[in-house]
Length: 201
Image (cartoon, rainbow, N blue to C red):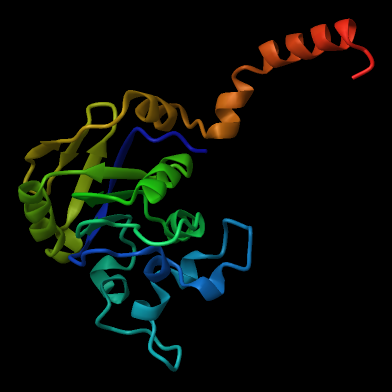
């Protein structure tokens, strides 16, 4: 997993409450266990028309937001079924940060494990950031994880809270496997001791 320290990108406004995991990646695209290739189906039912052509009214199809890497969304982002394909699809599209007032717990946890940063803010702050995001290509935010700040296009900064352990993992690029490998010397020592003491196992 790549380290996350400071990131600058265009923010797309999605002022929709209760964006669930089926909206993020519909169930028909859950047949793979690969993390790559899902970005093309991100928000499939909103992003495409019935004939497969792009819906020009959907925010990520608009020229200013086609390369957006930040989403500013309504309350309760990532609710619904607990599909890990949802953060995989967002990640594969290029989304690195999602800002909302609240997230579904499982989606929230899965985001961190996949190197994305979900940021919780209060309603007033979300309103200000949403207004910024509606400014098209000028809607550029800089997220500094170490300082725990979002710098708005006007230069003002917004602070956010994050669990220290999750912050450490993102800064160091550690997923669950990476955390386990940090203890590889202790694991090897235990296995050697186990082999010597109980060779029949």
